[in-house]
Amino acid sequence: MTTAGKRLMEHARETAALEQILGRLGWDQETVMPRGAAGQRAEELAALEKVLHARRCDPRVAEWLDAARSEDEVELAQFREIRRAHERATRVPADLAAEIARLTSLSQGIWAEARATNDLGAFAPTLSAVLRLKRQEAAALAQGGDLYDALLDDYEPGATGADLAAMFAGMRPRLVALRERILGSTRKVPGLRGSFDEAAQLGISDLAARAFGYDFSCGRIDRAVHPFSSGSGLDVRITTRTTEEEPFGCLYSTIHEVGHGCYEQGVDRAYLLTPLGRGASMGVHESQSRIYENQLGRSRAFCGWLYTRCAAVFGDMGVDGPDGFYAAANRVHSGFIRTEANEVHYNLHILLRFDLERRMIDGELEVADLETAWNERFEADFGVRVDSPANGVLQDVHWAVGLFGYFPTYTLGNVYAGCLFAAMRTAVPDWESALSAGDALPASNWLRESLQRHGARYLPRETVERAAGTPVTVAPLLDYLEDKFSALYRL
Image 1: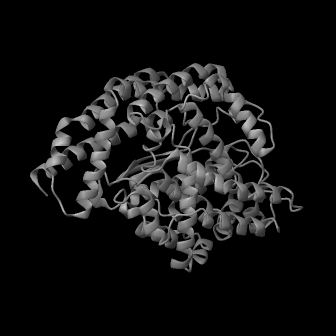
Image 2: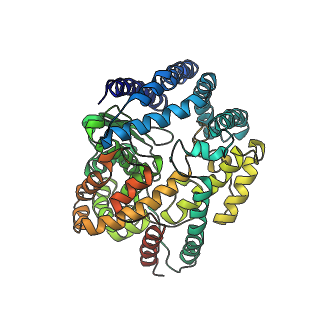
Image 3: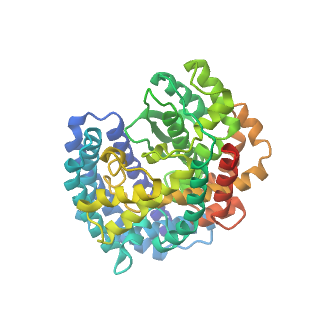
């Protein structure tokens, strides 16, 4: 590597280390930070964001990039990611970046309180302010191009809103048709019944995390209002949530976040604290969390193992053995909450949010009209009228913290997961027998070797296509859903 290349990588490593500190402050804020510290934490985050913005915009970065020379594929990928981050950062004024960091830190606490008290009016002015700043950021990034695409590029480089809208439109008819067939079936699947000790839920979640290979020597599980994962490399933390009435929310939130955590822990350590030492995109990240949670975690094989552990702790759960537990874990019903949605309904939740946030960023929809737009779309898609803001527009933290452009990566992740699962079943023929014994490592190790270890070395779609061995299409996901739920509901 040339001298310029070495200086570029040294700068990038220090920047990555500071980004990890910023992420740790965010993790602390959502888990253990005292409520009274919110104002101070907002100033801390804004100050650190200013430092990071200055480093990303440092004019020496462009000079080093111009002077750096390499034929090595990994080095070229590192330079590609540095150039991309530098070009995006230089388009956004430092004061705007800092103000977004400050406001979204405050907004998170305001949202949490509004959600707890079911009071959209208490949050709406703050959300309007966040939206205004994100529109400014989008305009700075887009430079005359599509505003939403400019924000989407933060989470899924290379994707466009138009391409995703076309993909989602192709999925919708089969999803809606499957939903109608299931809801019209005479087969009725009961949910779990009983009271489920929250400490016991966390204990079983711990076992499930270990079954999938989450490394607790470099990670931990804590509680948060909205489950999330944070960090990369040697410090990867996840969170979950519990309620006494329903353990699946805890168990599958944990497995979902373990998918994120294992991805970050699985990246080649040679990439530690470099631009390649993280997931390729949020869509690829979601492919890992969704395949862990659904194709593996909600499989009949793993549900059988999980049932034994739950029954030993909780006793009678109101279901008929392992088969009843498996059915309950995959029960289809028109619930309000995205994170608790079954696989059939989940993507309909995402399509709703995707369409609304595109309109918000483009200026077609204001916060004052958001609740009405949300409720009308939800009733049309799910056949149920939203009964409260907490079960509707207030349920997700994403817009509160400025993550416009993030939502479509969930469904894109499901599409990626469908492609990967089809390949994994061929490559790991004993995956079901291992899962039935509570051993998810054969599946998780295949994902680590085929995809996770590469980090951001390849572009997002290339990362998935190299692992799956086929082009990305929606067909594997839709085929999997139809096969699974046709059998479950005897269609």
